[in-house]
Length: 222
Image 1: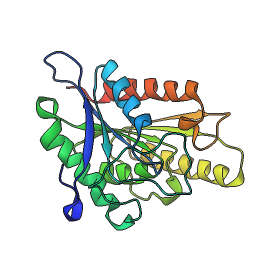
Image 2: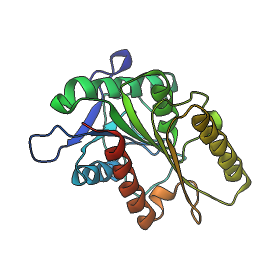
Image 3: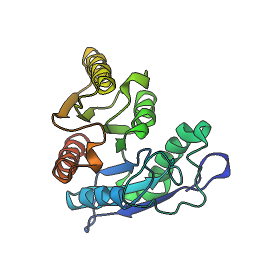
Image 4: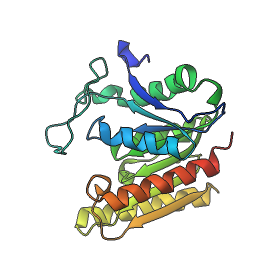
């Protein structure tokens, strides 16, 4: 798919069998980069009756982030260092999914966005009408000013450190903004987990996948 500034973006598509149409859910990796971890979410969304698409919107990962799985190769995508094109890269990924990938399944799509990707996903959902639902995982709400117009499922670990408690207050304030505007919002907090609960607790990762699929199916009616 065409990305910003001449870059090329890649996506893995997992479509249920049958004629469809099916709701479409785009998985946007976090700051840990594009990897098999995110492909599993897309496969699980397919098993739930969604077209699951995992997109690579930047290449590699910052060296400060250490996770067991190596990132998958996205040689023509923007580098993680090129912060200036991140917003445009996510927007281009959404446009590419709608125009080149979704086919007959195209309609308002769902965005499953982990950590930093949630900032850009919610910005899109605040300005576009083709985003039907957003799942934001461990989103940096303290850095997000745009208010989503799409239904939102907020998944986060409670954490115990001061900075995570601060993030929790920012999340509560963001939730209230949506409620004031009449936007459907659901919050689920994993009480015993830290910020990066998706990659540290298999049970909670599975629970997050199932909650997200059900949320998308509820709001992405075809």
